[in-house]
Length: 255
Image (tube, rainbow, N blue to C red; front, side):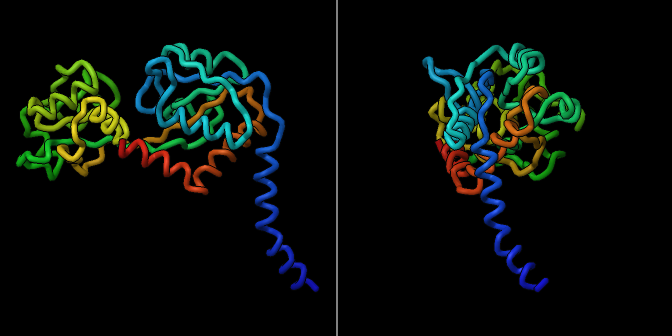
């Protein structure tokens, strides 16, 4: 008899899991949720009056799964984190989940994993096998400040050139030979910039030396009920399991 009961439990387990996921999605939505983001292409940004970006589309797909439709409000960068910290039931994306932020919010994700690499012109014959090779180059194009620059300086790079005023200009200067190599954005960001510049991505080559890796999340004010957090997480998990998340990622990697 015990064997029969165990077999029945095994057979019912997948059904229970599916029902549990469905119940979490079907739970009543919060009525006073505020959904905010910032200008940060290609993840979230406003262009010609329309909200665009990988994270924007992903969050919209999550809401469709939940049968919810909260408006997405784009705010200045500093204001988004202030609102997230102070206003109950606020959700904000896209945010790096870092140790110093861990206990400040509730987390839904990851939305996407980001990796940052150096890029060079494909027709370049410079040696780029190791970090030491890159340190010996004349000009490494990068931003004037930020986590990537800090990381490179700690690694001993003394050849950083921050004359470009934007990420887009960094890759434009790389494409015309002003830099030996360049580093600024994740692969999604690089593809976005090249597309905007009408530069064929095949003219550049990624150097397989990983400099930075992290994940982006949807962060929630700690007042948001746990069942609502679980509802958003279940929607994201469904998009990942049915392949829609990967399809969206491929769209942005191959603009």
